[in-house]
Length: 204
Image (cartoon, rainbow, N blue to C red; front, side):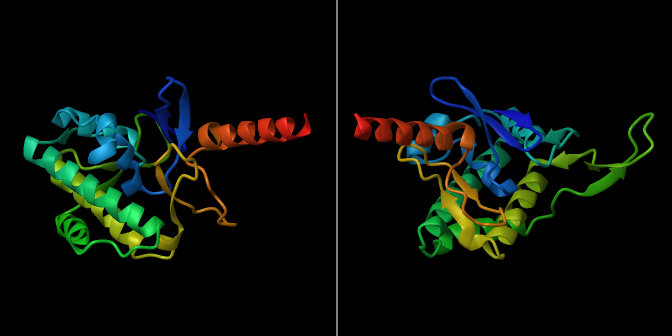
C-alpha cells in the first residue's frame, strides 16, 4: 500500500497498482489483511507496520505513534470485527453482537488528540496529532469512525465490490449512490472489457 490524495494505492495479484478509496477511515484498515481468506494479504507483521498504515491512511499521522505488540494484536482483532460487520451490513445481515462489542470497547478509549500546527515558513495552519500518540489512541480513533459509519446515514451504502473475484468493501458516498466497484481503475475497467468482448462475440 502507498498513500494517495484520494485513498490507498493497492496492487493487483499481477502487480498492477490501482487507487482504492473505501470512503471511511475504518474501512481503510481492511485491505491490510484479516481472518480466513483475507490472511494472505496480511501486512501487520510487527508494530511498525501499523505505524506505516497510520501514516498512509486518511489520518495522515505524521507524529511518531508508539505501538506495542499488545496493541498490534488489538488492531487485528478490531480489523476482524470490522470485516465481519462490513460484510454483514453489505448483505443485509445484522452485525454480530460480539463484533459490535469489540468496536464499542475500542472506541471507549481516548482517541488521538488533534491539534493545529503552523508549517515551517507557511502562512496557514494544518491539522496534526499529539507528539506522543499511542496505538490504543489510534485504534480508538478508527473505532469511533466505525461507530459513526455503522450508526450513521451511510450504513445502508456499505457494499462489497460487485466483481466475482474481489471482496473489497467500501461505503458509497456519491450523490447518486450507484457505485458498484472497489475501483474503476481495476474491477470497473475489467467489467467494461468483459462486456465489450461479450458484445463482440455476440456480433460474430
